[in-house]
Image 1 (cartoon, rainbow, N blue to C red):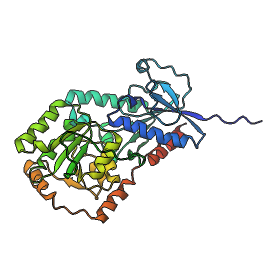
Image 2: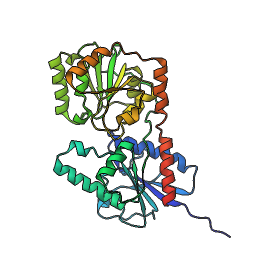
Image 3: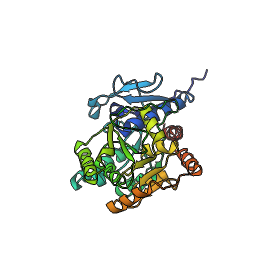
Image 4: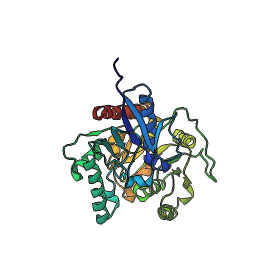
Length: 358
C-alpha cells in the first residue's frame, strides 16, 4: 500500500495583527483570510499562522503558532516547517533554520525619506540582513521593487511584484458617523489613514480656501503635534471651522464616508502602495492623489494628481474643485481599475511561490 504524501507545512507570519490601526494589520488579515480560502481547497500545503497569542481574528479555525518575544533570539517550533513567509521587511522573526525556505514581503523603503542619515543606514542594514536570509523577495509595487534594486543587493534571488488587494468587504453595511458639528450633507473632501507628517494632510487645507467644502480626516492620530500644525494652518487660512479630525473609524463608517464624499484625497509624499486609494476606487470616487512614489502606479490615468504642493497652486486647484466634471464613464473606469487589485489574486500568487519553494 502506498503511503500518501504528506503536505508541506507553510507558515505566514501575521505577528503584526496586534497593531489594529496600521497598514500591516490589514495586509496580514486580508491576505491571511484569502490564503485560508486557497488552503481549504488545496491539500498539498498545510497552512499555519505565526500570530499573537489569543488573537482569533482570522476566519474559521486556522492553525496557529503563538508568537513570543523570545523567538527573536531562540526559536523552537513544534511544527516542522518547509516555508516561512515574513510579512514585512523589518521582521525580527525569520527562522534561523536554513532548511526552511523563506519568502520576504517588502512594503517600502520609506525610511529613506523619513529618517535622518544615521537611521537610514541602520534600517537599510536590517532590510539587507533579512533579504540575505530569504530565498525569494516580493515587493508590493513596481515602485518598491525599483527602489529595492537600487538600495539593496538581492544577490540574484527571485524578486517579483504582487499587488495588495481591496480591503472593502461587500457585506459591511454603511454606518453613518455621528461627530459633533459635522454635517455630512455638506460636500466634503475625505482622507483616511495614519495621521503623520508623511501623509501631507496640510496640503488639503489649502484646497478649502476658495470653496465651501468640508475636510473630513479619519485615522488614528499618531502625531498630535502634526494635527495641531494642520489646525493652525486652517486657522491662518480662515478655514479651521471646516476641518474635522474624527479619529479611528469602523469599517461601516469608512464605507459610509467613502460612498458619500465628493472627493477622496490622498496627497501622501511616500507610499509603497496606498491601500485606501484602492478602497476609494472600488466605489468609483473622484480621487485626488499626489504624483509621487507608488501612487501614480496605483491610480493610473483614471484619477487626478496634484502636480505641486506650492500653496498658490493648491489654492487655485481648490477653486476648480467646484467645476471639475466627473462623468458616469469616468466613474466606471475608476471601478474597473480597482479590479486589478484583489486579495484573491495576491493569495494565488503567494501560494504559487510557496509550492515552488516547498
